[in-house]
Each structure stands twice: as C-alpha cells, then as structure tokens.
Amino acid sequence: MKFGTKALHAGIIPDPSTGAIMTPIFQTSTYVQSAPGEHKGYEYARTQNPTRDVLEKNIAALENGKFGRCFSSGMGATDTIAKLLKPGDEVVCTNDLYGGTYRIFTKIYQDYGIKFSFVDMSDLREVESSISDNTALVWVETPTNPMMSIVDIRGISEIAGRHDTMVAVDNTFATPYLQNPLDLGADIVVHSVTKYIAGHSDVVMGAIVTNSETLDERIAFIQNSAGAIPGPNDCFLVLRGIKTLHVRMDRHCLNGERIAHFLKSHPLVERVFWPGFDDHPNHQIAKKQMKKYGGMISFILKDDSQEAAFDVMKKLKIFSLAESLGGVESLVGHPASMTHASIPREQRLESGLTDSLIRLSIGIEDIDDLIEDLEQAIG
Ligand code: P1T
Image (tube, rainbow, N blue to C red):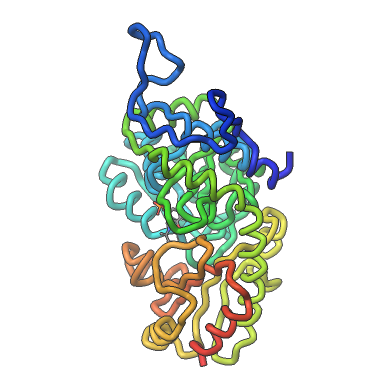
C-alpha cells in the first residue's frame, strides 16, 4: 500500500458495533469485566484504549514499522526512550537538536548516571570516535532543529550496528512521508506528533515506532507504568489530521522550496539553512534519504544583530510569532530565546545557532501572500 492510502486506511476498520466509518472516541477510563479477568481485551484505559490502538497501528504503518506507541507529548516519547537506559550508559547525540531534548538529557537523566555527548553528526568519523563500550544509544535528529543539518541515517546505523548500539531517530521535521528511518537501519523512530503528523496546532502528542518486539514490549511496559499516555479525544484529532498528511506535506514542501529560494536571492539575507539547496553541506544525503526537503527554513540577515531579527519578526503579519511548527499556518520563531533557550549559549554557537537566527515553519497558505509578507518584513 502506498503512503496516501495507508494514511487513510492503515489500522482503521469501521466500528463493529455500528459501522461508523470514523474511529469512535472511546472516552472511558475503564471497561466492565464479566468476571474477574474476563474481559474483551481492555481492562484500564492507561493500559489500552481502542481509539489509541487504531492511531498506534496507523502511525506504525506510516513508518513501515511493526509496533507503534503514542504518548502525551513528544517529550513523553523521548522520556520513554531515556527510561530504556541504565546508570553507566552513554548516549551520543546530534549537537544541534530540540532544546527540550537537550534539557531532559542533561538536566534530568544525566543526574541518574547516564552520560550524554553532543557531536556534529554530519561527520560520521566524529560519531564513530565518540562511541565507547558503554554507548547504549545514538540519538539522531535529521533535519536538525533549527540548523537543518542532515545526518546520514544509514551511515550512522551501520556504525552503531558494528558497536552493538541502538539508534533512535527523531523524525519530527521530516515526517514519515518524507523519510522512514527504520528502512535505513534505525532501531527506533520518535515523533513529536504535535507537529506535522497532527498538523493543525491543536494537539500535543508523541509517538515511538519500532520493528523489534523486544523493544516494543519494554516501551509498552514503560508507557503503562509511567503513564504518559494521550487521551482518546486527542487520538481522534490526530487520526483526522493524518488523513491529509501527504497532501499537506506536498504543499509545505512546495511553499518551503519557493521561500527558501526567495530568501537566498534576497539582498538583505546573509544565509539560508534548508537541505534542498545544492550547496547544503549534506544535500546529497538529504536527496537520498528524503523524498522532499520539508517546510522548515532558518535564516540570518546581513545585519547580524538580534535587534534586526526581532524587527523582522515583529513586522511579519501572516507568520505568527510562536513556538512549535508543522501546523497548517506559518509560524516564525527565535530559537535562541524560545525553543532552544535551555541550551547554553556557547553550545548553541558551536552548532551555528546565533542570536540572530530566525526560524520559519512554512504553512500551506497561498505562496504569494507568504512571500509578500516576508518581502514587507525584511524590507
Ligand atoms: O512539544 P513536544 O510534542 O513534547 O515535542 C518535543 C519535540 C521533540 N522533537 C523535536 C524535533 C521537536 O521539535 C520538539 C518540539 N519542538 C518545538 C516545540 C519547537 O518549536 O521546536
């Protein structure tokens, strides 16, 4: 089955009791048993919920994976992966990544005796030399947030395989429509479903997909034990959002491409970060592992001051100034003070994240209006 068909049909069956074509919202916390232990496969809604079951099957299918699990947020999903680790374990991470991921690793799990190192993964030799006998996990984000660097998932998976180390890929920016890390050798895919998968800026949710039954059993055990589950209403909203994921993504990518080129040719713009450019350092890898290049773009102005960046953000009218991304409407953000403020400045600068960096999440509005908005704001 191809992607668009899977988005609409994978895991979805009409409700057996009514024939309802849309998955019902099972808004219940528990299920009646006819005798102790005699039930229809559902005991308590932290453990199982039919609306969530359908969504988990659907997301797993989109990632070409066997097992999917949903969580109350992307961070809930990341937290679950971290809980697979034990004191003494080491994790090698991309040096450019979502600030909240950096924060949970360094401010929470580091105190539990897990060591995290952050490396420039565009250079595979750096990754290999960072792996030790204690490395239990390689954490990849690609494209990275917010510098749009590209990491070679197959290359990393081969290296990790030689060292018997797991690879988890945060696939939030690419979505399962543009990139499928499990097909490239990764062990685990993580999503902030909040973003493109849900797509309408009305839900916070996370997901994990894997092909390993053993891993999935452990993930399900943590999901039930720690309890970071999404509610059935949110699962319904995400199932509804997914039905247009491929259609939305095509438009996000098309608008993204137009805006990336517009910015690149603008006389007041110094540099644009977007993996679709021929001269992007890992463009060839992006071309190989992604279907298209997505709707996320970062850029810096020729006037490299924070004030100039703030001025553009203030002048934008259609782009709303807000954290998050991947919704149908366009957003603009200032990573240094917003999404990545929890990363120390020196570390941010090492991956190129300056105080003047502007990040755009390109929505699916009419492209002419978006370009006009950027034109009047940049000047
Ligand atoms: O917000 P939440 O659903 O918990 O997802 C966290 C998360 C995980 N991974 C990536 C790559 C992310 O970008 C995020 C959340 N990011 C933002 C809110 C943002 O504006 O970048």
